Image (cartoon, rainbow, N blue to C red; front, side):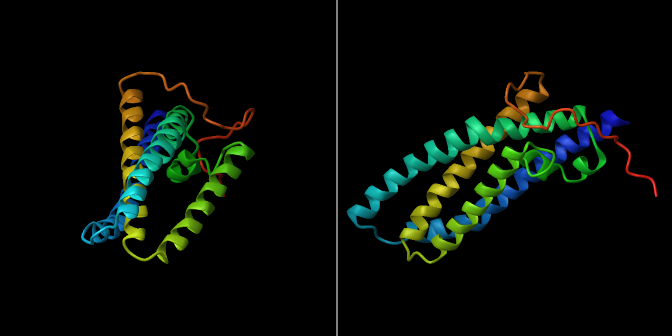
Length: 181
């Protein structure tokens, strides 16, 4: 039964994060399209090219492909082998490193999330086409990240080992069953 719940937790973690990131793309995409409908000046086009390269490299490649995506899949694989009922229940948060993670990983996860929220609020106040240009880079980075996460997930499913730190605390043992009343 533990093996079943471990697989459920791993699937829920990856699918839950897919839904979260997909929802972000869905919400931001209309603003990117709105900017594409407006005429751009040369410096807006130059910023667009710079921003797309920056976001695809910085967010997509460095952030997602080299960090977030393999860690999510490594933590999902760890959860599948070591299921704890509340980790399975909160698997997307577990895979992101918010729970049952080293102190450093939790601090990084919370800091990155806080930074993203601050940037979302700041970008909201930008006029078009600037907001849309920024959002185009965000959409490109998120789609790259989703793709990277699924490449790692498929590799894990077909048996490739994901050699990425899980950032799970050491010497912690927890039972699968919920506490009895």
